Length: 454
Image 1: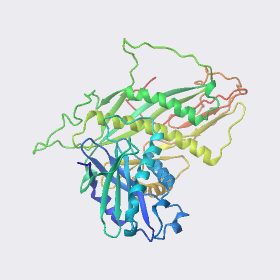
Image 2: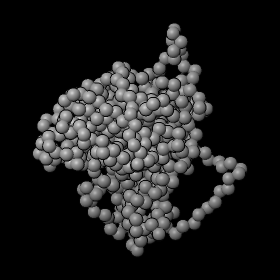
Image 3: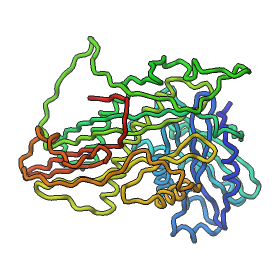
Image 4: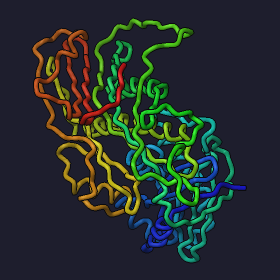
C-alpha cells in the first residue's frame, strides 16, 4: 500500500488553472508536511520560466530533456527559505501535453532527487531514521486531466517508483497548530589559522554546524512545561460536546534552554587553537513552526521548532553573503571595521489559514519588493497590508578602529557606540599581517522571556 497525500482543495484549483500557453510542459513544487501515517499538501507553486527558455519551450515537440534541473533546484532552494518550521518541499509536479505523456517518468525521477540533494546541502540538520524518506512526484496531463502520483525513496537513488494516493480535502488549511518562540543566541566561531584560506562564508557555516548541536540538545518548554516527547501536544486541551479536542487558535509558547551543566559521566575538555580572528553572532531570532492537528506529538512539534531556529539563522547568513557577492562590495583594508545589516524576517499568511510563510528583507527593500518576490517564488498574490515584519529595523552602524593589533580579547569591547539592539549587523575587521574577521550579528528585537546562553 502506497502513501496517501491529503491535499488542500485550493491546490487542485491552482494546478487546474495553470495554462501551458503552447509550452510542452510546466513544472513546480509541492509544499506541505510529512507524518508517519499520511502527508499533507497545502501549497503548490510553478517554477518560473527562464526568459531564454520561453521560445524554446513553446513547441509541443520539445522533449523533457529541456527541463532545466539547475533552475528548478535553485527555485526549490529559494522557496525552502520561505517555509517556517514543519513545512517542507514534499516533491515536484509536472503538467504536460498528451504527446509528452510517455516522457515524464525519468525526468521526474531525476528532478525530485536533484531538488532534495540541493536543499539537503544547505541544512544544518539531518532527517532522523524514523522520518518518512519518500518524496512525491505528480504528473498531470493537461488534455485528459489524468493524474499519476508516485513516490521515490530519497535515501536510495536507484529506488523505483511506488504508487501513491492523491486525495483532495476541503478545510485542510485550517487544521494547523502554531508554535512561536524568540531564541537568544550568542555564537562564537573562532577562525583558526588553518582555516584562514577559507571564505568567511565557509568558516561561518562550519561554526554554525557546531552551534546546531547545542540547539539539538537544548531543553524545550511548551507553555512553560517540559512535556514527554511521546506525549500528545494537545493533552489537557478542552474537549467539545462530541468529545473531540478543540484546536486552539492561540500559538503555543516555546522557550529554549541550553543545558549548562554536563552530566557526571561526561568530561569537559578544552581545546587550544591558534586563531587569526573570530566571528560572533549575537542577538535574538523570531521563530515559528506549524504542525497538523491530527494527533500531534510533542517530539514532532519540538523538532519543527528546532529546525526553524537552525534554518532562519543559516538562511540570513547565506542571504547576506549572496548580497555582498552580487553587489561586489569591496573589502575594507588595514584596520577599518565594516558593518553589514543582515535581513529581517517578514511573515505573510496563506489566505484562509493560520499558517504563515516567510521571507527576508534588507532595510532598503520596500514592501512592494517583498510582495513581488512572494509572487515570483510562490506564484500567489499577497496583500502588502498582510506583511508582518517580525523584527524591528534600524540603520547599520559603521565604525573604524585605530588599533592595528590582532587581539581577540577586546572584540566584545569594540562595539558601535550607537545602540544596535534591533539591528542585524555583520562586523568585519582586517588587521595587518593576518585577517581577523569579527562578526557581530544582532538579530531581531523585543522583550523576551526566553533564555539562551553559551
